[in-house]
Length: 162
Length: 176
Image 1 (cartoon, helix red, strand yellow):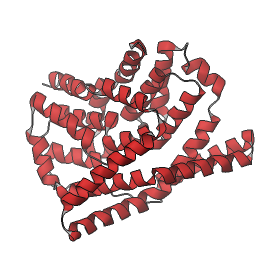
Image 2 (cartoon, rainbow over the protein chains, first blue to last red):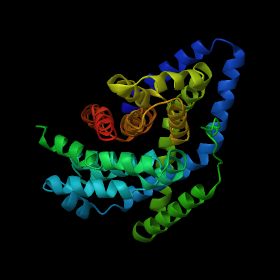
Image 3 (cartoon, rainbow over the protein chains, first blue to last red):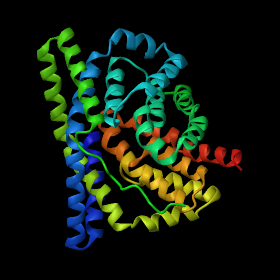
């Protein structure tokens, strides 16, 4: 269902952009951009998605339930943050792992903290592009102000009556 | 200041990071085969490849949008627009830009370099990068909504909504 909604939203947006491109020439330019992205990303996507599935399978359910489950509270949120910082790879890996952990009994606040930490600090992303292009000073400043965010997000989710 | 800007989307399919990814996948496959049997590896691979097939229209649309935006809005126009905005308004614009500019790190960080060259402050750039990290539309719609329940995604985005603005504001106070 989610996937259908997302597909419709993106298809409408893509259609709108297609319209806006107006000429066949500019559309052809966009198609060649798509082709380039496909060639570069398809092998990565295939391998990453399958390995995400394999990792989700390897998650030990009892451990997940004990440390990230209903009784884990803020400790689970804090642990989620640490795990998020350590998770390598693209978006699909962290989301697939979060889905696997949720199925195994992890709470939503712990997973929000996990995903927030991953999104803000995932080491691979930082090393590759951000450091090279924006510099160490930028990263240090960004990290300094962002460190409390995963705990804040998880904490708010924890405090909400749901 | 150097005018040179790194090319967008420069990435090859089979580089070192792909090899690392492949090695990790093979280790994971070995572990699953060891603990649950080789057949389970085949099952998981098949089900996730099927999942990828279901996702593929969405991914293609996302790629198309990411390819169309730079053609429609020349980078200079976009860059000037964010570089000139400053103060709280700049932080608001940066939050929006981070949320709606399509594309991955290969697109976002070179763009941020362009914003900086055009005069955007560190606070604005941090807001931009944080908004993209927390709720960039590509990642949220293509990936997060595919794996996690929509209530979870919406709640997370709602909680995160003011945060890029907040961190930018703090940086702008401290670095003044």
